[in-house]
Image (cartoon, rainbow, N blue to C red; front, side, top):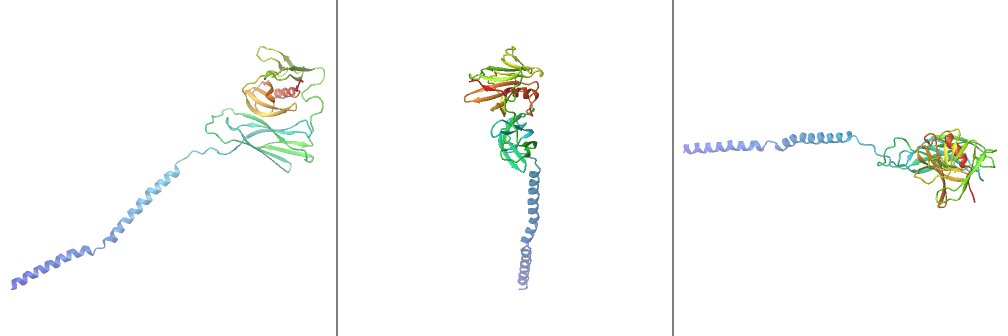
Length: 311
């Protein structure tokens, strides 16, 4: 009997010991320990890589985008020209340089306030495919100004920063012969056709003391006027159509003429009439700048001022 009691006590003791070994891990707070251990890992993984990517993306340099809208045109000179007529025509002649070889005139605005005419010229947006311009492309354009109802006084004309002044009332050139026609015994005339599609005959007057008429000098350009005191200055009275870059319009002999540049030192004046036109070429002693007339160009325009069609 005593032997059985001892065996029962041993079994009971073993069960108690085993029960204690199982209960110990059950009482351990595993979920809080797991959460506490994983939280720093989540924070580290989220903060470090993301901030690194953002900083790298911000620091990467990018090319500046091209201008997508109209651009101001660089203007170097502005003058005021008074014509003949009723009412008297007044024009602002603006000279400058295109922003690049592909630019075109996009917008002209004119605002009058107090005693100032403010003119703004804008060119078309930049073209990324446009080739570089290493020399500069000049232009000249006439912009009409209305002075009919202005009170007497001095007025200012500005165009993209360049400025000039003029006075009202404006005075037309003296009535009588055209501005370029000389007076006295040295006046001479040239009459002939222009080769552009058989245009009617025309007449121009010139001062024989200033210009020498040369019918053929072997250059292939017939009917020239060569300036006697400006070497290299000549007018081709019967110039034909050639490829040229239009740069401005001018008003001469009560007609509008398109001014174009053929070569660096060659310009031409073309005045259309229907499907025909008259063309004068001007050889300059120096490269044409587009920033105001040279002495040769002024002298040539005085001859063109005498132009008339022979009926």
